[in-house]
Image (cartoon, rainbow, N blue to C red; front, side, top):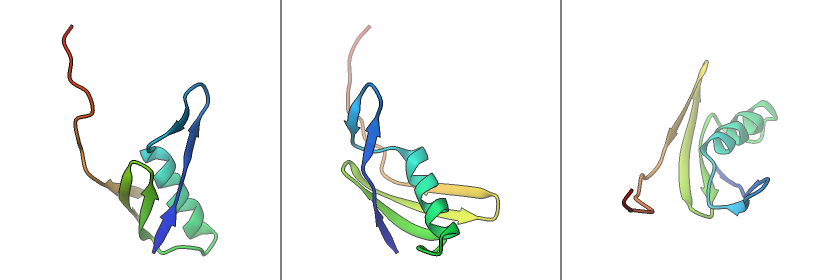
Amino acid sequence: DRLRMRVWERGAGATQACGTGACATVVAAVLNDRSDRECTVELPGGDLRIRWDDDTVWMTGPAVRVFAGTR
């Protein structure tokens, strides 16, 4: 299964991704019989793979540096 999601954060506006929101989206979709317990959530910043096992939700996706700076 693949779900598409957009994120709007109060005070920040549209953002590229939200891991917590992606996990919650999959749980809600499963509870409403709209998705399997493992699926890909498509976000503007890239895809996340979410799996809901019993009482644990797992999220897998890329980790990339988006900023480097000094103190």
